[in-house]
Image 1 (cartoon, rainbow, N blue to C red):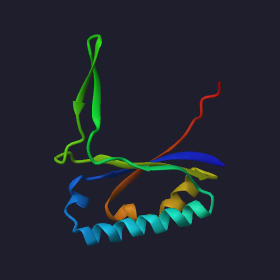
Image 2 (image 1 turned 180 degrees about the vertical axis):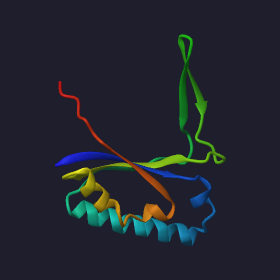
Image 3 (image 1 turned 30 degrees about the horizontal axis):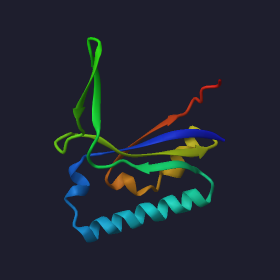
Image 4 (image 1 turned 120 degrees about the vertical axis):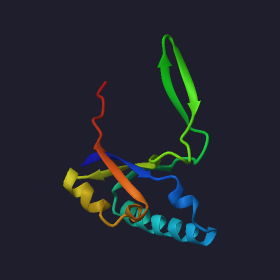
Length: 117
């Protein structure tokens, strides 16, 4: 079994414009999908990223400079991450095919190359 890092990308305004009822319906759809894929043994770590409090880090000369971000006016943010276990990249894509996130954004899927010590 191989492991893939899945990043959920979305436009920040997409979910912030929903009513509380609509948001609860979206959360229920994600939970149903995750629970089904997890029960089949394909989900490793999963996490939703907080909407605020992120920092962008850059090196300027010898110092690390932190700035606020992401911003609502950004065109694309990473809203969540998880590890998906699948036999191949094609199998990972098949598992993600009915994920509700496609209604709100797009996903990036990268195979994890674990570092051996």
